[in-house]
Length: 248
Image (tube, rainbow, N blue to C red):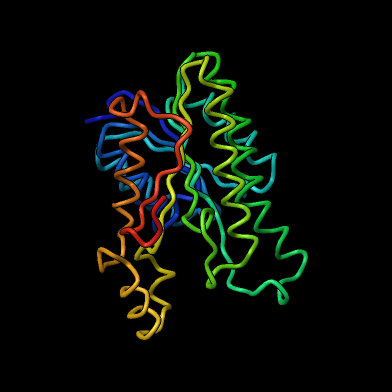
């Protein structure tokens, strides 16, 4: 129970990696607020977390809207005595080459992935500053570090922005005993990967040194580690979780 008596927020928790992160934190003793735009899926997740003996509250909202972040802060104040952990997982992707991409498509991805992470951090950090402790884990991507033909340029740019934001906040907030790190998943088996062709999957596996796709649990376990006291001397890092397909 690495997170016993801890209070956490996970954004974008409706499915895939975000859902697994929320469950992993709950299994390790954390009470949660889970956020997203699909009320039905969030309620199902909340019930599963509550069945584990942990409290779980649902917060509906689009993090691209600054008002949603402020509403989340109100939810925290209403239901939790403090906030120990914030996991910024919410994000979107699109698969379009640069010249086919519309201006509003670029803006939407930047708004959700980068601006949404910033808005949420800005809304929750005052609580962490006041209590003089806290952990933020941002879910980035290996695409932030090296280009990927199967991702739109806005996605890589937004995730690279998250990596810089992670470092900046880690530096700025260290004096308040607040740690800020990021995880950078590579090929992970999610609903999106089920859309891949057999040929694409085969070629991808050939490029991965460990010869397998990652699982949502692989990302969730790293988030758990960074959120726990096992990582008290780690801040400002963007950690790859990709089977070795990109190393730095």
